[in-house]
Amino acid sequence: MFYEDDFDDDDDRAQRRFPLRVLWRGLRPIAGTHARSFALAAGLLMLGVAGELCGPLILRRMIDVAIPARSTGQTAALAGLYALLFTTTMSVFYLQVMVTARLGLLIVRDLKGRVFEHMLTLSQAFFDSYPSGKLMARVESDSERVRMLFSETSMAILRSLTLMAGTIGIMAATNLRITGFVMLLVLPVGLATIPVLRMMRKLWGKVRASYARISGLVSEYVRSVPVLQVFDATEVAAGKLSREGRRFLGLEVKASIWEYGFWSFLGSCEVAAVAVILTAGRGGVMAGAITIGSVVLFIEYTRRLFMPIVMFSETLNQVQRALASADRINTILSTETQTPDGDLGEDDFPGDWDAIRFEDVWFRYGREEWALKGVSLEIPKSSMIALVGASGGGKSTIVSLLMRFYEPVEGRITIGGMDIRRFRLDVWRRRLGLVLQNVSLFSGTLSENLTVFDPSVTEEEQMHALETIEAGDLLDRFAGGLSGEITEGGQNLSMGERQLVNFARAVLHRPDILVLDEATSSVDPGTEKRIQRAMDMVFEGRTALVVAHRLATVRNAGRIYVIQAGQVAETGTHLELIERGGVYAGLCRLQLVPEAVDA
Image (cartoon, rainbow, N blue to C red):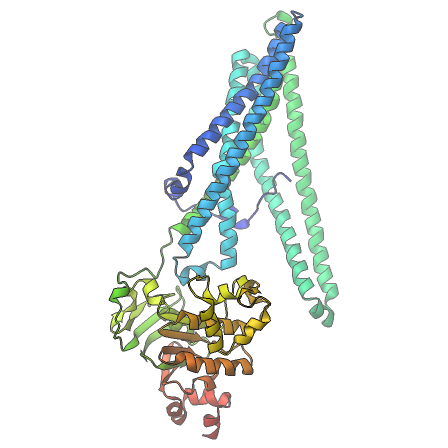
């Protein structure tokens, strides 16, 4: 279907917030590097259009001069010239399409690369606002539209304008009176196409939206067949699909009627224009004021006139959508990170630091309620500190601030008395190791996942890391050992095995400060014991911050902070907090921790 390219309700409602000069300033570094290719494509296009416009002129000369003179040689020469012109024009257009296609691919490659590199520098707050799946789809779609703006769309506009201007100019130079009659028919048709095309685009948008809903329902119901069968809801599901199917059919039929009716109307207008030319030219031919070849020339040019007008209207709509896409891309490129680099490098980092301190830290996500309210805590060097408390209390937020995924709204975090924001991000994070509950594994080898694509880590170091956390049996899972392939997200590994890979990463990173955020909450008891033994070895000589729901895993922590409603509710050792009989003791009793039960 001609109009079913890409319909997104958000696009139709999107309003550009950047002036055109700002959009161009953002895209110019990319487009400007390919100016020569664009000029070459435009030149080839103009040359091809010129060849296309010359065809009817050759036909007129053949009809008016060669054929009446009964000159076989001249007729053959003009026929050969016409064939040569046609072949050359098609070759020129082919080269233009190739240059334009290459230009578009180069632009979209550079644009996506620039957007991706910029996103790598942004803080977590940006990705909180833009879910990764939708962000990637949005960038992909918008980049493609910008590519088309600088390639197919711009060439289509240039071709339409050049062809229309050349056609009308030659027609007017041949016979102004007949040209006037033709324009009286063509202009209203051209103006009428704009609202018709908009209406058809909306219709096909509804068709696509209905099809998407059907696809979503089918996907959802197929995944949930056992549930539907158990709850005897299969007829309900089939009924919903049937209703949506009938709606889709109605929309499809309506859109198809309008589409084929529109093209039939244009065909009728071409026939009507030919009739106008024949009627207007009849008297001139009879009086000798206009030749038969000129009448044929008008017919040929008129048939070339309708499609550029329609395409020009359509490409203008594509330009609007491409500008909206450029606006969204410019929004990403103009977004500044909320965790900027500091000015202090490796040599400025305090080697004799005594503790990491949260000093009256306040933080909230966007305009939500405060996630942390005046949190003050201390993580002494070479000690293990634990954060416990109910979900949503602020424990993971503390970890995120320590990792500099976010910055405190008020207060500060210091190491050896120096604000961590003063250091470059790479300098600070080089000293941190992070093990999360949700493990991020990549499609690739076991070795690539252990080293996170760092080729400087040797196989011996990787093997030693696995042995350190008692995970040497992971090598037996793959025929190739470290070269064994892990599927996307680690789907061919169990949850416990994924977490072991996560711990091995931390060991290989050799961080000064190790942070564990619910690292053992999703593994089985056997794996948890292995990880607990590994933790004891890994923590030796390191500073550790452990966030845990399973309180039995943090009984040996040097200090435990109970985080509740964004504040430090209690602090002390495990036994001190049990004896106090407060929030921590209550949590221990719920989990049947022995000391709390005995108390």
